[in-house]
Length: 147
Image 1 (spheres, rainbow, N blue to C red):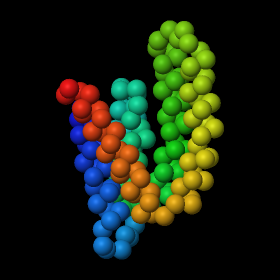
Image 2 (cartoon, rainbow, N blue to C red; image 1 turned 180 degrees about the horizontal axis):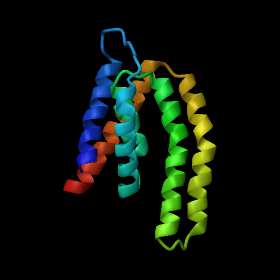
Image 3 (cartoon, rainbow, N blue to C red; image 1 turned 90 degrees about the vertical axis):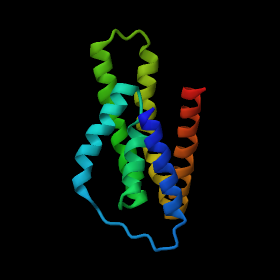
Image 4 (cartoon, one colour; image 1 turned 135 degrees about the vertical axis):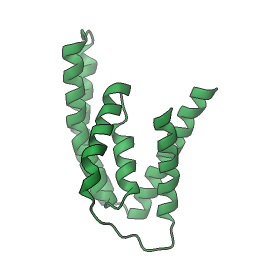
């Protein structure tokens, strides 16, 4: 629930950032990357998902280039999923090998397409799309939790 509330606020923030009247300027901040990666990895491993939404929205909310953020997060997500699947493989008895292989192969195949799609989108469009998607999914999660 905490992650859903955080993502709801980040989604609204991204939408507001996309329609801000000021010119968007982006600067790299490397000091947040390691703590964010640890948090995103923990959320992904503990909750069965969350690397993409948590890391992407946090970096987009900061001052990093949206196209670079989405490409990098998608590329790294393959390795996060591979590490999670490997841990799952050794810690839990796996009975559905096809599902596990499908997740790994699917993540590997989709990554290049995300980079290609975002390279053709404007910064405003990316921020609006990601903000709306994260906001809608967070509202849905919170609705399911409370009702």
